[in-house]
Image (tube, rainbow, N blue to C red; front, side, top):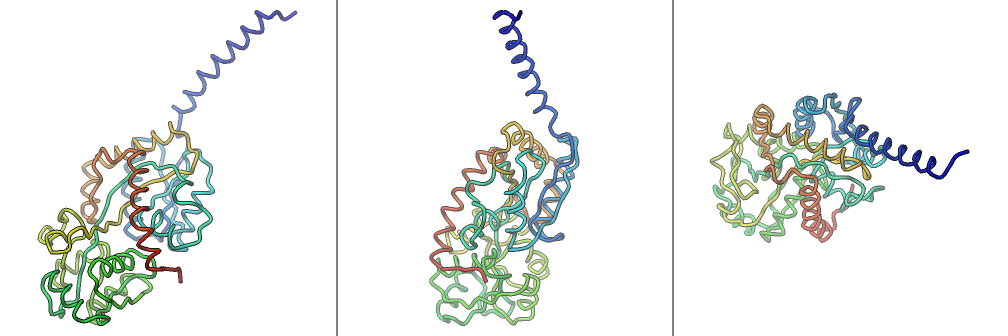
Amino acid sequence: MITRRMLLSVIVAASAGLSAVLPAMSQSYPTRPITMIVPFPAGGALDTVARVLSERMRTSLGQPVIIENVSGGAGNVGVARLARAAPDGYTLDIGGWVTHVLNGAIFPLKFDVRTDFEPVCLIATQPMLIVGKKTLPTETLKELIAWLTANPDQALVGHAGVGTTGHISGIFFQTETGARLQFVPYRGLSLAMQDLLAGHIDLIIDQAVNALPHVRNGAVKAYAVTARSRLAALPDIPTVDEAGLPGFYVTSWQAIWAPKGTPKEIVNTLNAAVADALADPGVRARLADLGQEIFARRQQTPEALGEFHKAEIEKWWPIIKAANIKPE
């Protein structure tokens, strides 16, 4: 006959066994490869950053981090894949300003960029460069703004499509300066850059890495860096504050997210692996070569990413909605 004391002993033993198993389960993560979704085609800047990080994260995690390029819908197809993934730490995505901020204000999405993901870690940021064709009759940003203001609707600004970094940067520039610009969409920034080099368009405001080689060889004019500090890769180019457009800060940043509901212990394990990778001198050097500036260690916590993400949405969504930007 089972007595009350015997029953209590069984319950206590079972509870003790369960409490011992749960830490062991969390400590055993990961036990198989992790997939990191890159929501754009292979070969782009975000894909390169992901591959640099994934190589080093393997050292900390003891498992490979496999890159899966899931492109389409301006990055929305890949991010939607993450929203549907199991919250077990084996599927992540690397995205940022475009996929997790801009797209949320432009596209009718089946997920909510504000609530459907667990922040893991901020990675790096890259400011924009304001660059113009060599034959523009201006040498400084102040002169450029004066010329644009005196010639409304004359300047052609190239970008890689509605809602892209270059387009939103141009809209913000127009708003802040009062200039009236003509926006010319292309099927990729490389095509826009070709037309800028040929003198067919006047300006591009886009990620610094895309213009670096052309600035270095003198093929285009660089007016300013859209950040508070100068770019290490181009230290001679002034910031917007120095050049006469204070506060015109536009940066394309990257971060890693997990599906909503991923256990905090797993998020912390992933965060530690990313932070460890970002502290590696080899990783830092490779990202610097890409024009990327790594966030400070204090900004690399999940909580810091959550706060930063919220602030970016609060800044950019009103600008996008005021400009009535719609997907094409």
